[in-house]
Length: 188
Image 1 (tube, one colour):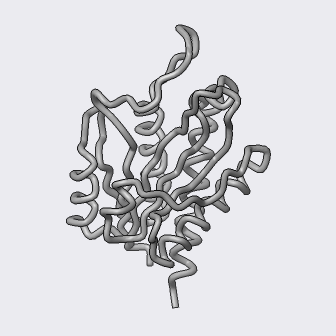
Image 2: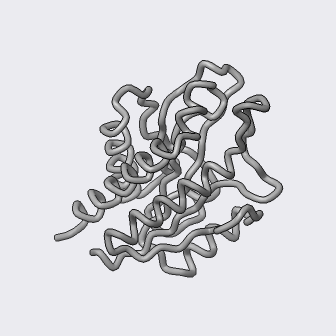
């Protein structure tokens, strides 16, 4: 199913920076990390023969409703939203993948395949699991959908990890591997 359509949603953007952490030496805004990761994932997906569409290609605001409407209107086969987690306790760390609270079995498969590939790639990171959540972009999309929290931007160690180009490439490649596994599991 290499003609599949992958809708990639770099979370936040424009006046919505998402989480923003660090001092003048390691400050970063989540929306910038998400966009860089989205470009890397798009390249990985295109190299594997998938069609891709991003909800945004610059630091611009895109309403949540517009993200889901665009994915639905394009006829995406899967929806992947990219984020970095944050918490007031700066020791929090880990990778999680979210599916809708009442997700279809196919969303569950997508979530588990992508999350499994991420944890295989990063076995030394805390596995926060596949979680059921009521995020708008998961609830309002009509195709299997996931939201990946790639690590905690609020933790100084994992913030440095997220800012490293090699880490971003490895995250994108792992998500791409999970997407491949999902479609392989779907083929008759």
